[in-house]
Length: 246
Length: 246
DNA sequence: CGTTGAGTTGACCATCGTCAACAGGAGTGG
DNA sequence: CCACTCCTGTTGACGATGGTCAACTCAACG
Image (cartoon, rainbow over all chains, first blue to last red):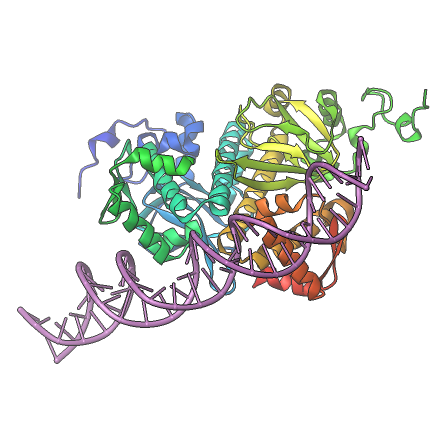
């Protein structure tokens, strides 16, 4: 039987948890997520409701239009969020990174489907439990609303990309966008991780895999990026940014 | 000097207002908007903060990136919401109809620009005043959050349209979408009002005016619609809906 | 009436999608 | 260990959807 890790022995006793689990107070994405709105005592309440879950690549977290009985806070990995048309066309409406919250809407059915791109860890809450917590914590609701309007802003920016950008600009905006989001999670990066497939990228940008592939190789030929396994290194971030600003 | 209209004489005295103004309690879009969350007394508080404003066509309500000192509740008319790229390309991210609320995000700068398409009436609130009201009315915040997540859902649906729909499907989805939204305001309609220009429609759908024009005339040739001044009459709503569902 | 601006229509063209072939890596079984 | 398949990604040839450019109509307005 392994000893309880040192970092767990010191936590305040009010917060009981299963042996070996790290508490919310130590969570590295706490300040990025809804949890930032809560003080230490409230965090214990939240933690009591949370259930740590793990999803292997391609496993689904939930499916569009099914009853939304759970909401998730992603702590590790990448999740793709998408809508399908009856004929099979797919639009990825976003990639959830650590710190992102799925279930902002508190609606009774999911508005899109979500599945893991790489191994994912997430805190799972029952919608009911979380909703009750929300009822007597207006500052938590404020935080939720903040995050929701932030998502709305991202969605509106993506509408500009989808409606008015060329293929080249679309790929550039994905790379710069992901770089900036990873920076908030992991600190500044020059090599942008791209764990999702070309098909995922294409379905996010409203393109085909071939166009995504061609555009990336063109960027590589022009020494703006270096393609590495599961990512790209930005050799000339300025030129890449220029493409997104034009 | 005109007499005070009969419908105004009977309102409860707690709600004082300028002569001739109709109170929130009588507002025809009250139940569609944030105001639905408030009881009669709270409505008076809100009314005290509200300032009735009017905008002529093409007048701007606010501009992207400028300080967001006011928020608006549209009571009449149509407003276009858009983002501009430095080179002049424009993406319209939505049309606000009566009942819609501009300023859901409560951010300190506007995330997009807004201007009147036709004569617009709106209730204007200072952001500060509204924010204060929000602080001790959690149910108002809940309502705001509800509306924000609804907007988010619309934005995500529009991402599917922009990313994965053909020109024909795009135009059809605009017509069906507007028809359903007008129905919530005015009751069921067969003639969908299109007060915005072809350029506006094009910039909403990620197309050009020519493609919008051609698509509409093709629909008309095929007897799916009848083009009338400032709108279209849906002759075959089923076929139109089929185009949006495919 | 002349001017202006929105909308329509046609001819042509470019960007991006389609289709197909191929390369390389991972996993599987002889 | 090697052949085989499978899957993802790349590259090329070709084509279609929708964009560009231009001419024209028509209504509104002076």
